[in-house]
Amino acid sequence: MAHKPEMIPLEPDPVSTGEGSLIQSFTVLVPPNGHISKSRFPLPGRTAFFILTFHLEFFPCFLRLSCSWSVFRDEKRFWHNYMIRGGKMLNEVTISRAIIEQYMKKLTDALELDVAIVGGGPSGLVAGYYLAKAGKKVALFERKLSIGGGIWGGGMMFNELVVQEESRQILSEFDIAPTFFEEGYYTLDSVYLTTTLIHKAMLAGLKIFNLIGIEDVVIKNARVAGLVMNWGAVSTLGYHIDPLTLHAKYVLDATGHDADITRVLVKKMNVRLATESGGIVGEKSMDAPVAESQTVENTGEVFPGLFVSGMAANAVHGGYRMGPVFGGMLLSGQKAALDILEGLGHG
Image (cartoon, rainbow, N blue to C red; front, side, top):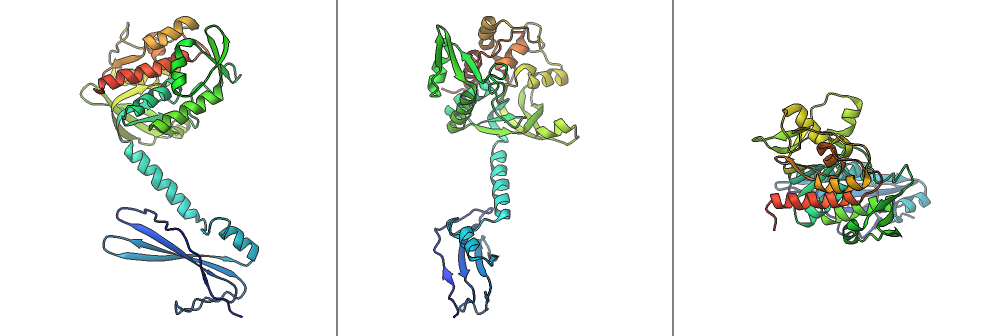
């Protein structure tokens, strides 16, 4: 006995596919020995289940109808692939298109920024949080796969780190409660701190792009006015691939010990920085208490349009290093954001 095709009711599922277009999809099931009589063309399914999905796209001047199908000879596999997935079949090309279109939309939107942050360590994330919270258009670029800089490893790969009393107000704003160790010393799980900083910063509106390296700056009217970017893997592999650029009213160098952005500016433009020597002084050896205060003191604008924070600030100004103590990093990020907001005329 022939079976009638069954229409599966779907929730309206419009999907944008481009300028001025919209997709509406509906699905028809054709069980074994079934056919679609109203369509005027038989679809025999004597030994198989057919799933037909029709896509109707609306454009300003025309409509486009397309169809995709799947065939299952095993009834259990058919229902597993269809009903368990809420009546919708996955399509590999749709998955690819969704990723490409959404990423390109996000990247295109980041080509004109209020602030571009380079480096995804603690000072960069905290600065991004406060800038985004203030309503500024800000994006962070990290060459590596993971965001978080040196936080992940804690001290010598023991994933605990120390913060001091002065930074607790920032931790409180991020809903992070450190563990009391002794007077003036608090500990935090480094994985917890990293993931929470990322989460809160993105909730505030910070856009993060990992795997993108910055190889140069844009100069306009003797001022840093943007970044020259490429895939991080390009520099790792040593390929010669021309980059793309973005514009930003301010750039924050939060690249850590190497101070990559400031270094390339000095190397290529032979500019004088707002430091004692006029150049990059270089990081000193460890003195934790001095380094913690210097990290905040050295945070600021070193060239028109270019700010430094975190260990990049100490490297540029000649400050000490501090090891796995991160209170100064958090405070440096906050100070950088407040100084940049002042430069943007906020408040």
